[in-house]
Amino acid sequence: MSMQEKIAGNGEKNQIIGGMLYLVATPIGNLADLSPRAQKVLSEVDFIAAEDTRNSGQMLARFGISKPMVSYFEHNKRQRGEEIVSRLLAGESCALITDAGTPAISDPGEDLVALCAERGVPVTSIPGACAAITALSVSGLPTGKFVFEGFLTTLKGEKRARLAALSHEERTIILYEAPHKLRGTLDDLLDAWGDRRISLCREITKLNEEIIRTTLSDAVRLYEETAPRGEYVLVVEGAKNGGPAADEYPEDPAAHVQMLMDSGMERMDAIKAAAKARGLSKGVFYKQLLSADDTSDGE
Image 1 (cartoon, rainbow, N blue to C red):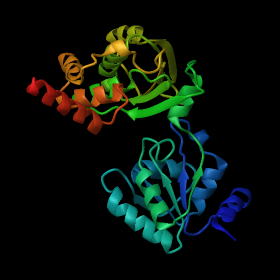
Image 2: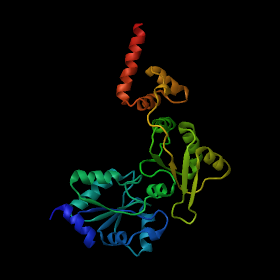
Image 3: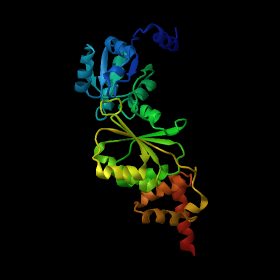
Image 4: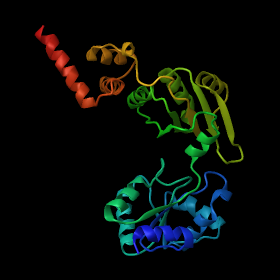
């Protein structure tokens, strides 16, 4: 029997397969969202890898589940990933869970899945809660095409460059944000993208769940008077037009970079943003800059 057939059979018979990594989605607020299938897998695997063993242990205890646990998080993922894969190759089964939601989606797991793929270890997913998809579905904004950005970088220059690169994105944009950073991020979005529709989804599936459908400018005003509380998913309307019009930036590469620097960007961030706006790689655009400089010197 092929591994594909085994995985298909697993869906029908609910049998745990030795040597398999199970990505198990956990509730993002409401414990009732942990599916019966997820509970069965967590009860029957050989061990559980968790982003935070203490938090996950408390959650599992609510369901009467007690299994050996190991931690797997951002700062130990390289060493611990090797250990987990070694155990999987030896025939053990493992369930990977995070503090909330679907593993590997803006949470630990991506590197472990890649390592399993590299070593020939089968991986399957036990679907469940995902804050990004839940927020998108109730946003009132277009859902047919979207882009997930997760948490924006906290480095100001890189953040400006990323927002500039996304300024002409036509698809609905999904972001995560912590309450203490929300005001600054809303200001940055309004500055970079102009006024657009936004859905602010707060404390999804929890007691104080709140969905605010408004505009960026009104959201900025709202949170000038109201303190942000809880974790947020921001669902933002995409740009009305696709790529930049020819007259939106200077034809001369150096002038384009200077225009962005005048708006507050560092030089390297401006180069990245200008290259993105022109649909070029940073390397190709940098060569254009050097060529333009050489031509100017020759004159």
